Length: 216
Image (cartoon, rainbow, N blue to C red; front, side, top):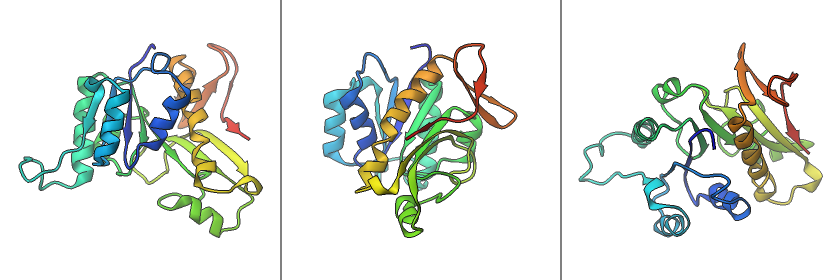
């Protein structure tokens, strides 16, 4: 890999774990995993799969000097320190916390979020439910660079499926796995650029360029 990559995840870390069910650590090595879900059995699972040196956890105990700060502040500050220390070029986000503006400015166009809706429709929480309640005809995901807004950053890629094929959340969330793989490969090949507030995907180095990708 040309660049160094990290992942921020919460909850059951399901996207991270599912990604490595069908992709190898050797082909897609990580330099950092930051997990803030505070679930011991998930930590044990991560430690059984990944090198302990790349694993970092959210800590907020009474003994912590940071215990009076919000979780958002602690997570953002920890990520900032860890990304700088480990020279992380790109961070993939599957976490629950909204990151601080300071962190986003520091690592502009280097932190990528995967949101389960076809943005700009249905930003924020419960986006799949929002889409279902709106009786949409298509449903999907958006990968975008994080900015100071909520799901308002520059769109890199979207995955789309007909609502006729929808059965459960995993039908939508599962499409994030090939998206992550594709974006990772494009980044490592220097095929994702940001110009004039648009994301440009290069088909080949120095070739013609296009502005969006979708999976159907």
